[in-house]
View (cartoon, rainbow, N blue to C red):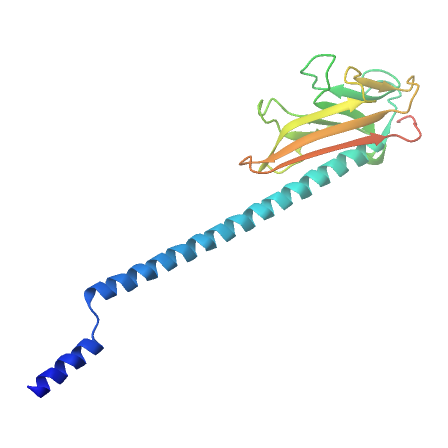
Length: 207
């Protein structure tokens, strides 16, 4: 009788009931699920941060690249590039009429062998989010931004006047160009708006 009693006590102390095992398993699964969710959130946040940084880097680089080229613009001596002698800048892709800013600009780039160069939003590729492209004399149009980014808004303005679409040697002030870009990532989760104004120094004639 005594030995039986001892065996029952020993068995109850060393064993686990099915309910206890289910509870422990449930707690373990809850902790595991929470940990996985936290890990996924951290990875997604890190990915978003890297994409935002890349968006900033590419937008800044493109703006600097265009600014440098526009500063090197020279007069068109014969009209071979801009259509009229003495023009320095000619706005192109003016889809919003003559009283509004345009989506492109053409000029002769002295620092690039006097190439006839154009920056523009190519709405022939995508009307809603046209890519920002560049084309030079005798070359093909190429994208300035990675395909993972799209331009929501892009405008070129001469001398602060939306209705002015050319700058020439007859202007009373040195030509200047304002660039406005609104760039989004592919998922529209990040947006970068950049604006700058480029002014010319001494005007010279292109060859």
